[in-house]
Image (tube, rainbow, N blue to C red; front, side, top):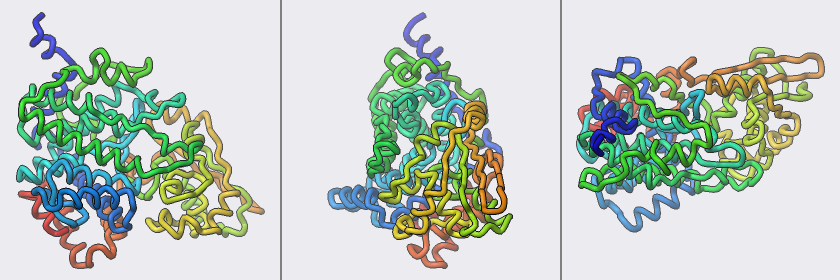
Length: 470
């Protein structure tokens, strides 16, 4: 078998061939709509983070604009100018990560965030190249499928036993490179090189800033996502110009699976046709880590359905999977990120605020509300073996919440929160999320026009129809 034959029989070759061959006609109507919503949601989240002037996004974007002001053709979603595609992906990708309001892949083999990296990268290339909304949707679909294939091959031990490598940085840069290469019309060999460059140079973002025991909750988490999106644009552009890379970056010796599988690696399997795994991507109803959503929703429903008064509550027991009980346990709320990654804060906030949650509840000054901080003392977090087993089998993030009052006890378990494929968000819910994120950044008239343009991105002849409204 010669070297060409080896390439043609590699799992990476099959993945690249699949991605190159995917067309909009291979994507059913419901999946097209879901990807359209993913894209619009990512843009809205990015604008919302800028609207709140979060420092991680501002420091990064200010630095880039000071150096490269209006240096390209791609609009910043913040509306602050145009940059080259890679720098726009860096800025937009950083903003999209800030609020932890982004998409989540829910799969038994792995979890993490993909669209938050893939969409800023693909959008930048699509805008620069004058591609249509349908072409962007197809490219994003190919990228997500590629990333899920890599995540499944790696397994989840890259962030267990004290390790902290993020799925966002292990697999999303490869998927984003696939999306960008597809938008550049690269052939299978070019696609393989783009994947190889992105995989070899992936930041592999460590997670010390998300460690409850470290308690740092720094801005680096956000910038790493922007860097991963920028990397994907660079990888595709370099591959288009003839740069080569390993064609076995995922499954070969010293590749991603070998480096991050830790005995749990499996064969990399490409979809045979269509987009069978896009439904695994969930959206978020709450502006916080996905691991707190089921517990928040259960708390909200219990308080509302049973008309529970806050002064009557004696204890709230929150049962979750084992690693969530550890990693989401922080009770020291130092900034907005700490709040977003704290089960005690999320549940206390939902309880104190009358069985509801808003974007503002995870922003200053709400995160320093003494009533919420003191009520966190009533919250007990329990690692539940049954819920841990459910997570391993399904990839889901279940929670069982028991609210104990002076007279009674009320219990509710939620396996899949709103936004999951089992309970998808409606367009009306996405509209409400967009309005909450972009008020007062946009006027009511602007919001209406953007919602009209963004409802079905597949109908856009060019992305200018949407971005010009920013």
